[in-house]
Length: 90
Image (cartoon, rainbow, N blue to C red; front, side, top):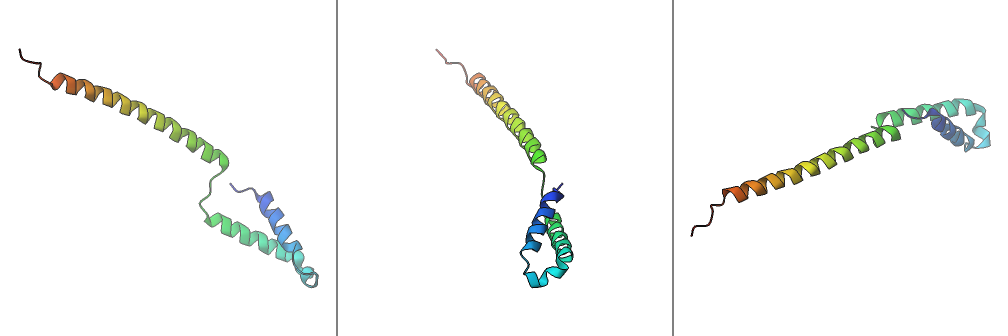
């Protein structure tokens, strides 16, 4: 989930940049900035850092298992190809 305190802070900063002559509606502008920011961010396919780290760890474990299975398969294939070669004839 997106941290709304950052959006509030950004909306306050944006509203503080408004020229003094337009500051009468500052609160309304701040709410509009906040709504636009929330709307834009909600359309993005974002994940939290925690979700990212969990998926990264899962991917790492999966990669390690795959590497081990590939090594095991290579050993088994090596053993089979050695067993298939006919013994040398005298």
